[in-house]
Amino acid sequence: MSLLRPTIAAAKLLLVLTVILGIGYPAVVLAIGRLAPGRADGSLISVQGKVVGSALLGQAVTDPRLFQGRPSASDASGATSGGSNLGPGDVRLAAAVSEREATLRAANPNATGPIPADALTASSSGLDPHISPAYAAWQLPRIAAATALPMADLETMVGEHTAYPALGFIGNATVNVTELNAALAARLDR
Image (cartoon, rainbow, N blue to C red):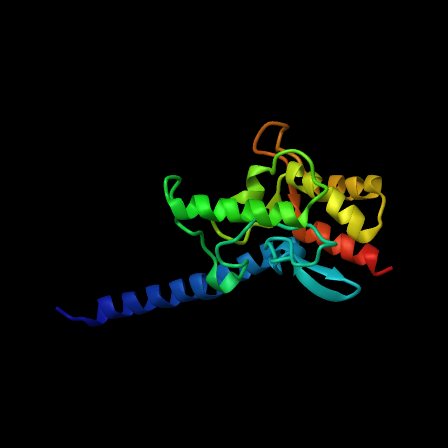
């Protein structure tokens, strides 16, 4: 039996699949990505022509004039993203939460009420750019004092960067801190 016929069939299949999977599929994915260029390029946020972050990634914030995101076990570094893997019964988790609570109370002396849970617990990826509207509202007194902006203006900004649940009930309302801080920084730089 000759091996020529199966070899030619295999070569034809290789050529066809190379064209389809090596050229066709990437071209289709690229074309679909061009339909939403902002998302395909990483949802970059620009302020005065300078890229300051991505709407998909949280950032470590130390400026008291800006909103703080959720705690991160990886310091919000994309290179080392991940959670702490500490279980609810782990004393190290309890210690970390207590330490975060003390740090937040010291940084936000005018805040009232209990600290929202998302302010104390790290996100699974460590890169989450979203906080609850309650955590954003809890930080408002500090930011108003640090920026001298009226509380009503800050509340409006938080509202503008709040995403509500799909269909009104799927998920929770969230505030994109990276986008909110970019807008706040742009306003402060005026």
